[in-house]
Length: 327
Ligand SMILES: O=C(O)[C@H](O)CO
Image (cartoon, rainbow, N blue to C red; front, top):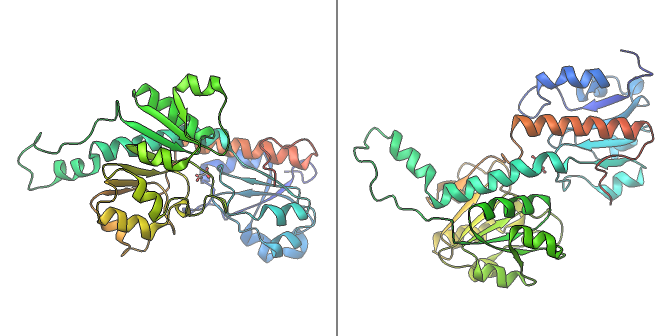
């Protein structure tokens, strides 16, 4: 592969659970001369001036001041996924480096997962599976009653791309939809999904049977849902989190779930991930937890990688970077 045709790109070590999938490597190698973190660490002197881009797959490699200082020709960091809360955008931009994410690749699968969690909790899918496979089970179709979501009220907190996709799906399930967002959506958007804006978060919390979190993590949304907010929810309500674990005060959530303040929680994200094995959330019957599966589909992962490649190619060639995240 000719060096002058292909930007050198620093990636996380190939393979392993946090690595770039091995079957993606062939695709990446068509566009880049890939340098793994290991190769970089072992040959810093030779490589540091050559690397122009970072392919950041699930928060790796860690981009800190030291790494930025050792890459004087770095132009662009492509992050897989939409959330960039693990990146210090101001620091990165002070080095003249651009950041891009992949919002369009993740919005459908993450919204799907939000619906899956809501339905799984409402219809007791996880308990049902355990009953169905248990050697002691003799009786099917017994008293494992759940709730129907049609006609119920869904409160969506964070009506960005993912929140809106959730609303589209919830409409098809004939739910009543409330939403709270930094800025109100235009009338056409609201009407298309039948969503009603709640300027006050309190209002949405009091009226919803299901509350779903689809906000970005920021200083404003850290512990957005704490004791006070949980107490405003109905005792029959379920909290679903597909955003970031830190958006919820987990100690307050554990208390609320233990004491019947709310009925249940369905969480794709926690803090930390994974939770320590003795964490109370892992042992409560009214909790479902999935291991951050929001964007975990083959289609999304392929699209993420494709979008990242496009952003890197544009960034290293001095063109506007698709999906650039501005500070
Ligand atoms: O930020 C995102 O898009 C997801 O959490 C990564 O899968």
